[in-house]
Structure formats: C-alpha cells, structure tokens
Image (cartoon, rainbow, N blue to C red; front, side):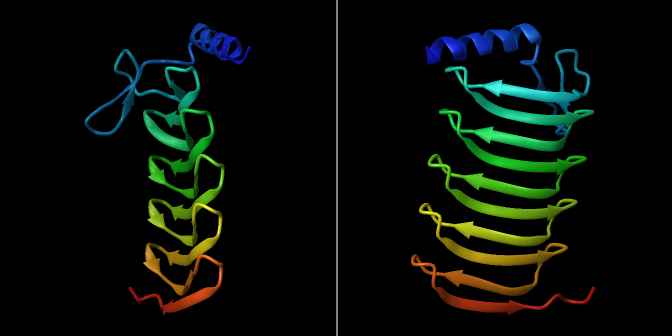
Length: 158
C-alpha cells in the first residue's frame, strides 16, 4: 500500500510540473529547460519516489530553505539562504532523527551560536561566532555530557 501511495504522489508531482529539469550554470545560477534563471521550489526525487532535495530559488539563486533528505525520506539537512548566501540556522540530523549540528550564518558569515552533538544526541561542542570570528567561551563535553574543556575568544578590533 505504501508503494502505491508513493508512486501515486510521484505521478501527481510529475503531472503538476513540480519536477522541472534544471541545471546549474558555471556561474552557479540554476537554469530551467529554456536556460532562464529558475524561480520557485525545485524538487528532486530518489528512484524510490522519496524526495531527495527541495530548494527555494529566486532568479536562479538559492533563497529561503533548502532541505536535503536521506533515501528513506528522513530529513538530513535544513539550510537557509538569502540571495545565494548562507543565512539563518542550518541543522543536520542523522537517519535516527538525532540532531547532530546546528549552525548560524548571517549574509554568508558564521554568526551566532553553533552546537555539535554526537550520534547519541549528547552535546559535544558549543561555540559562538560574530561576523565570522570566534568569540565567547567555547566549550567541549565528553561522551557523558560533562564539561571537559573551555577556551575563551575575544573579538579582534577591525
């Protein structure tokens, strides 16, 4: 029954035209089948019918969320862009749906809190950036979640 539902969804998506064929130019612009910059949500699918990637594009440039999935349909990454630049929160999960990383960007630069977890979901690293520079107290934790190391960074004057 699940295969029938997946196949039906795939056929409907084809019929609605949500599976446009786009390509990326050497300049990094996503183009439609007529070589025009693509605007809209672009989706790619695995052979089994599960979504592989969904990407928001504006005038051929990533703008908004891009989601990447494992072959089994579980979300692997959520990225955020603004005018083609990394912007906002990026999150990565494993196939068990455990969050592995959370990173923040502002206009293409690392900015804000960053976290790294192990495969079991234990926080291992806590970091912070401002305008691409390391700042604040960076922390490292062991496999039991106990703080084992700290290092302080101060922002350099420009």
